[in-house]
Structures are given as structure tokens and as C-alpha cells.
Amino acid sequence: MGWIQNVYYGYDRSDSLYHQSNVLNPWSGYLLAAVSDSVTAIYRYSSAGSPTEGSTPASPKVDENNWFVSINAQLGTAKDNMLSFGVAQNATSGFDNAYDLAKPPVGLEIPGVRTYFHRLDWSPYFEAYAADIQAPLSGSQVNEWKFSVITPIANLVILSWKDILTQIPQAVRDNYGFYLSGPGITGNLDMEKVFSYAYSGNIKGTSTFTISSQLTGVDPMAGKPARFALEQNYPNPFNPSTVITYSVKNEGKVTVTVYDILGNEVRTLVNEYKSPGSYQVSFDAAGLSAGAYFYKLAQGGSVQVKKLIYLK
Image (tube, rainbow, N blue to C red; front, top):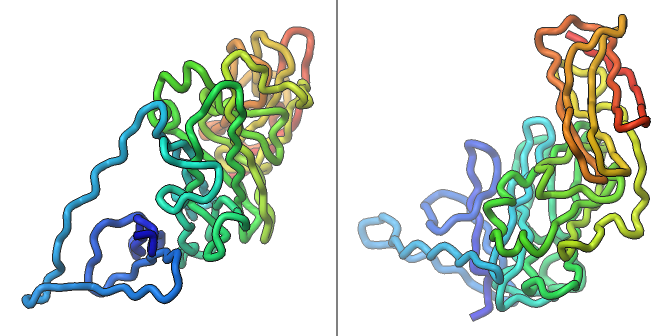
């Protein structure tokens, strides 16, 4: 009837996070998002004192006009796995109570990372949303989903969307690409080729990212600065793994290689053909001696080198 949203969240003490739930258990805490004033929730139970079980909601249909992708965020041991973007047959570009779900508060885990779609123009009851579901993709129109990440401390933040290839139907991916832009990303990151992005979060910082759909054959780099660049690894110093971000301006074979201070090659991290865009690769130094190393990005006649420090 439009009084509450059709999803509610239960708090799980085992991981200090909220999760979508379809069963209300006694003595457990739940969050229900009301979209009307003066809503009263009544919990009915049997005379024996056990909860009355209802039917489990059917899984939503997934096709070209109905799909969503999960975005996960991690800051140290803290996680936020409750963010999704997508489309639905009956959704609009504005607020849809059935699809655009309010974001539950951050769990009790300290420090916690929080992701959300920030929309002040959608509903007078909410500002932060866990889902942004829009009308189905059509023609060359660009759909955008803009979300923010709040970090209470300075640390490495990892965003990931590992299930995108199974969550978006092949028929959609044949016609559209999906690209991430935001802090530290040169141009656009192809989300169908790279399934995570790491960046340095700030103390009490907010970083905003945009996911864009592009019709296949349309250059997602149009109007965006493209460059050949090797970024400083993060974290640095590190133990035992670190993330290296790099960008290439032209199509061609790309190599990322690690050397010791004597110039001996110790690891080849990348040796493959790349399209223009930004990429990331992890370097795990376990088994190597602590100390200074150099890593080199090369494509054709272009080369950049930076130094990294491995501490044990």
C-alpha cells in the first residue's frame, strides 16, 4: 500500500552488519523504512510463542529490462555490501518506492565504511539510498548512477563488483559498456574488464564516483583526459601486498615489471594487450626480501618508473 518499503533489514551480531531479511525473529533488531507518517508495525505471533512463518518472496526476474549489480566496499576489516545499481521495467529516473531502497545505518563495527546514493530530491523521508534502479537502457542515452563512499579513517578502500558479468544479462552487455569514474581514475574504468578499484580514503572523507552506461561503439573516453601514467602504489610502505594503478592512452601491449635495486627483474605483473583506460594490479611480495624495489610501466616507446618499499 506504499506505507513501507518492501525490504527490511536485520542486524547480524556475527559480522556487525545489516542484511536484507524476510523473517522476523524474536529479540532481534530490524529496520523498516516507512514512506508515510504515523505507521505502526504489529508483530503477530502464535499462542505457543513461536513466530508465524510467511512465504519467502520470489527472486526478482532477471532479463534485459530487469537486472542489478552489487557494489561492495572494504576498509580494512570493515565492509559495506549493501549498494546496487540497475534497471527495472517499471522504474523511472526519479524515486520509486518499490526499487530505490533506503540505506540502513552503518553497523556497530568501528571503524565502518559506508556507501550510498545521495539524493535529496527523491523523498522527504530519506537522503541515503542502498539502491538506484532506473528505467531500462534505451538507444544511445547515457544512464548514470552516482554514489558516495564515507571513510572514518585514512586507509585503503577497495570497491568491487565481482559478479557484474553474471548479474547483467549478456544481451545487455553486447550493446552497452559500463564505466566507473571518480577520484584517482584517469578517464574511465571499464567495469566489465576490471572488477575492483582501490584508492586511499581520508579521515572523515567522502569520495564520489559515477557509473555510466555507454552504447557499444561509443568512445567512453570522449571528452575525458587520456594519458600514459603510472601512479604511486598504495599502501607504501607495504607488507606483504600493495596495489599499483596505471593508465594507458593507446591500444597495444603493456607490461608492468618489478625490479630489485640492482636492476634484476623479480616479477612481471602485466604482459598483455590493453585498450585505453585505467587499470590496477596487485603485487604480493611474500617470499621476497624486505627493502626497496622499482616498478616499471612500458608500452611501445613510453616508460615510467616508480619506487616502492616492502617492509616486514
